[in-house]
Length: 153
Image (cartoon, rainbow, N blue to C red; front, side, top):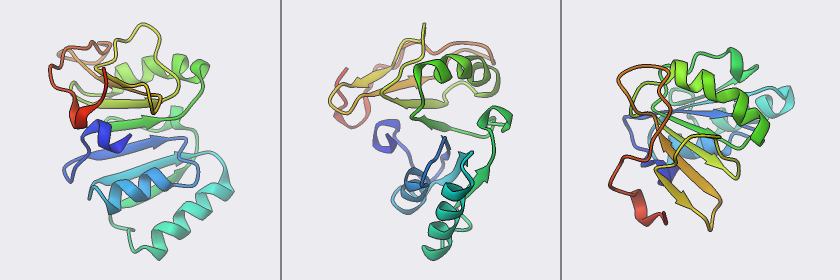
């Protein structure tokens, strides 16, 4: 997901439903990005926070305990999701309202209805979307001509 998004040191990555925090940790360690996970399960939050602490990533990575529908995502340059189709459907309007043009959204397995992916990796069940338009409320369209890291379209 992080490779497909073209993650790098200038990115702020939000992992929605971050689980055990592995995407957040990997974003900070390997890609040197700032990373934020949002997780509702308090045990997974504690585990993730412990891993971040043990790896000395506190300045680069953090986990928020809560509902990602109540978290402001406007600073994100990349959003990763592994949610259900129904949750993605509910999330669409929030993403369109809060994400800036150019923000990349990578979804594992489930798609966003009515959004055109910029790239797909069928082998890994990933879809990449890039927010387009001059303001909030514009759904992604597959307008980018380059596909990062040899991703299959």
